Length: 379
Image 1: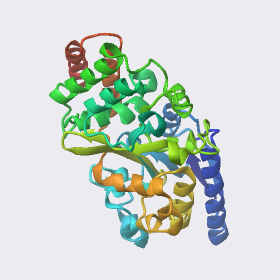
Image 2 (image 1 turned 60 degrees about the horizontal axis):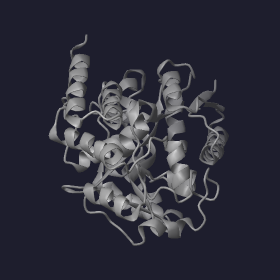
Image 3 (image 1 turned 90 degrees about the vertical axis):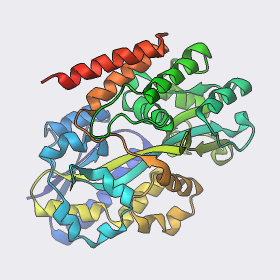
């Protein structure tokens, strides 16, 4: 009897590269064990793919999932604590990386690729090597140089807005929304909503456009400062990307979000999890998470490697962008790990819509707090 490996679908160059490396890995596994592995491609939309995984529609033994989904999927996943204790490669994983697949003190996923969020800027428009010291400096720089800024917002953008913009800004203001308990009615949340209000309403520095539009406009030099994730470097602006940028290394810079307590980056990533009790499925994890496969995936798609041996490899260490993004791990925060996260984040994103539409931040915060309190009281 064979195994099934579920991965997220898609039509990007990065997806094609991943598929190529997964196929090689599963073929190697089959040669060693005599066990066939079928790769099942799920939906290319995160929400649709998560639903397929949650409902068991893909009937997979091993699943590639967003680390954000671990809390809500944990009950259907095999704990991997005993597996990693007997797997010598686990010692090669960065300590922060190990946390991606953890929930409730147990391990449910092996980190596969990681990404950090920060600020991209157009070197030609900003006209200098720049490392902003405060969030207000970013607004001033955008206005002074007429280099349009872009933040993502609203429920349509979903986690793109939440992780690339809202949470990094909130953390930069010294806040958090979850520390064993949910708290959205805070000074930092008010400052975050005020930041959106200033950027979109009072100073008109941002436009009401989608992330796809923003990434294209950044590539063409019509946006100068963009809060986004490191994968844009390759998937959107690389030679094989959606919107290739000539002389990318000269024109584009990536820096941390400046916070009141120092630089801030949010990081997340995808993990391999096991959905069946099959010992063979856990053996397949070793092949998929090997040094060779991890290096190929992370260097070809511009993602931070979770393994220290990959980070130290020649192919990885000679890439200045990957090296800089890896250094940012020291400044990184996780998204909150709680089952209610998706529900709470939706309400926060609604609040960003309210202020972008012109509602005063304090009023939007009151509505947000009321909505979240109602959710948490619901049975």
